[in-house]
Amino acid sequence: MNDKAAPESGFRAGYVAIVGCPNVGKSTLMNRLIGAKISITSKKAQTTRHRIHGILTTDACQYVFVDTPGMQSQHRNALNRAMNRAVSGALVDIDVILFVIEVNRWRAEDRAVLARLPTQDNHVPVVLVISKIDRLTDKNALLPFMAMLAEQHPFAEIVPISAERGDNLDALLQVAARYLPEAAPIFAADDLTDRSERFLAAELLREKLFRNLGEELPYGIAVEIERFEMEEGVRRIHAAIIVERDAHKAMVIGKGGERMKRVASDARKDMERLFGGKVWLETWVKVKGGWADDERALKSLGYE
Image (cartoon, rainbow, N blue to C red):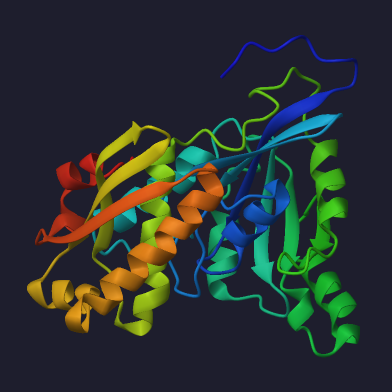
């Protein structure tokens, strides 16, 4: 963080947690709000595994969005427990919570996440965000759905949005700002995230694995950046893709190495767009059996 001058009267700054079940569009929402790809996305559930801050600074407000993994209802291994710790940790000292659900879907899983939010004792307001309204075929169904949800919990406000199209996001920002305290900026005005380029490189590579492997994607897959160096304006990145079995290694590499080449090429292009400079990326696959249930291995890969 850089030194910041005192804010003008009325400036607001604070933390806004984005929570919800896996795959409801939390990361897409944060990326759209801050205007940069900080949190990775895919159609695969459990894409987000870490707590990530995305920062948006306007003339009147600084929002520090906290994107979280989807709450895991089954503690199958240490990785799931680490993801739930990331969610719980994100909710400490939060000023407002954006609780994201999909339009016309109010499931037992959503109710379970809502029940775990630390709102009653801490008096943290919860704004219900109804996502993906662009997919609603019958627009007349939205108001009855909102009315039903208003009876489920004393939400501070209910805001329907489409992160994909950008619909109603300005209204969501105005709502969130009302619950932020008057304060000096927490981060420098041009910061987009508190995460390093090294971390973002690993995440972008992991996203391409999710997207290219599709249903073949093994749950026990991770990325470790072993070297990240800047040489004459070029970021030289050496990345290991971690899998649990030899069969998974063959799956990632693909026939003749074509899948690995495609994954690396797609990741490199996204890195260059995000970092604003040339990237040289080398990737390989390592087999580490049982890493997803090994607390020491998880810590070495950046899990809290």
